[in-house]
Length: 124
Image 1 (cartoon, rainbow, N blue to C red):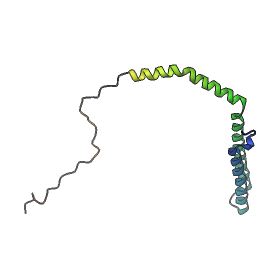
Image 2 (cartoon, one colour):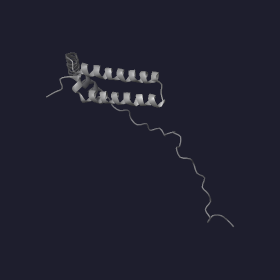
Image 3 (cartoon, one colour):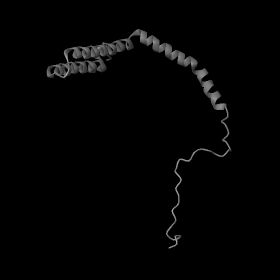
Image 4 (tube, rainbow, N blue to C red):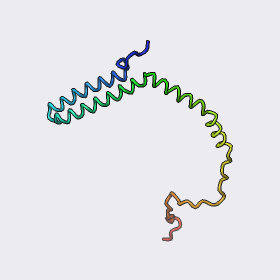
């Protein structure tokens, strides 16, 4: 059986568990004097806003409106297939440029080493 409410989604449940843990971690930080109560309230509101955004997205994704939008997008993709296919075919039919016969003038990537005379060639 499928999910009937957003609160049954594992993603929402995980976010809620995370939020509760952060609230406990923030309270502990205030108790230990690492952050002020004002900062704790700021972070708490950020966590709440993030959870509300995730919840809103999940509600939308389960809505009839999202289903309609997904169908429209799928229909547009299907309708544009011949045009996209012809563009790909047209690009493949264009000949590739011929390789240049001019000598390369790129800089060398390896340093030139001076050859040290071998001990055989050195006069003593």
